[in-house]
Length: 287
Image (tube, rainbow, N blue to C red):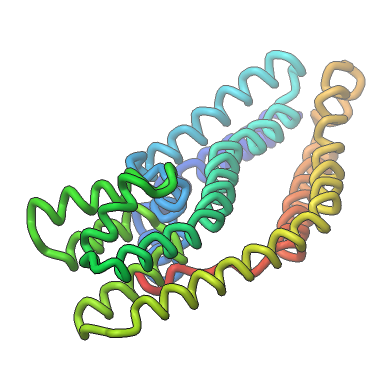
């Protein structure tokens, strides 16, 4: 690869890195408010709200730099090392997204139980704050810290609304948003049918959970096969990078173009696979 081409690639890499650093401060906030897809919202839904978004960006850039140096040392190819650096830069975001999926699945299985506990406590004559506080002591382990924080704040301030807002922010869950807003409305207008509403919501969530479980179990093998098909070419590239003649073939303008096209096709195919296999996901419209 000639020095002029190398300089252009280095300039493009630097520009992409600077754009990643700048965009979360500007446009990502707007997207976070309107669509809920910002890095801060993603971390909150993964249960990592204490981690700032810029730290995730920094980890991605650092991991990409390490992968680039390691791949460059092994393959002695700038093009091949740049491809693996691009793959490595997405790993932190992929881990967070995986955690979001796991957390949503975990919460979806325990919300019916929580709603039943709240409804039983209300029928027994407890107030709403007391019923919610009991979830922090006797509810599912995944939700106890958030509800315990609600009980502590309500005990200190005596203000039900702000305590619910704090609870909603800690949970960062669409189902939790609906439950909390129903409780807030019942508290403000003095609804007499709160128990019936909660029981209906519990039945609906159980039916939805059962249906989703059946669909996921049927399509899981297809999704795993598609992921393997996307990963296979890059595993083969890693093996070919150990052969000097293969490195020389990729470390050229034509080889770089081939890697860029292959990376673009892999990204498009993977995103298309996820979109086709994705079940409808509730958005947090009641934040």
